[in-house]
Image (cartoon, rainbow, N blue to C red; front, top):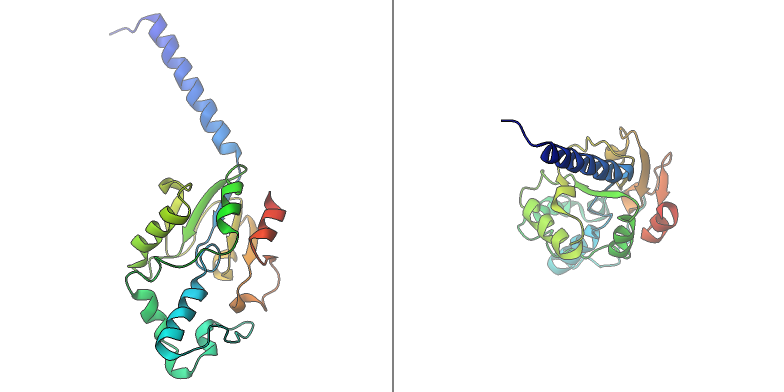
Length: 200
């Protein structure tokens, strides 16, 4: 069946508009942002639980270059994994100071994606999705990815783990956390104010 010329022209116009819209969206650089210890203060949640269960001080000295559990008594070394596997652990973690405001501002200049290596902890998947919906409702579900290894193509990545940054081909921003303070060779940001100053 042959389409009327007017309808054909209309369809071509719609396709042209869609292509232009896609091009406009693709012009924004892609920015990948980690969750734990970047937009979510996971260390604080661990400390709350260690304090509740074992009396560990909330202001315990965290030696640079060491994981939190490496600063604790040896008998507690594996407790962090028990906590992280619990349903609800990731649901009430406080956001990092300034994260919500800055990420929302970044959306005006970048296609922002939240990418978290979450699949090791199966209960974290629903918790993290709920957490993002509560604190970052402006991030669409299409821009959220839970994974194991972070094999992603983007222009910029903000992460606290060099295992995620090492093979990334774009601009790599190492977000400071006690465990990575001795690492050099990366562009470092210490807080979300510094991220804003660099990227906005």
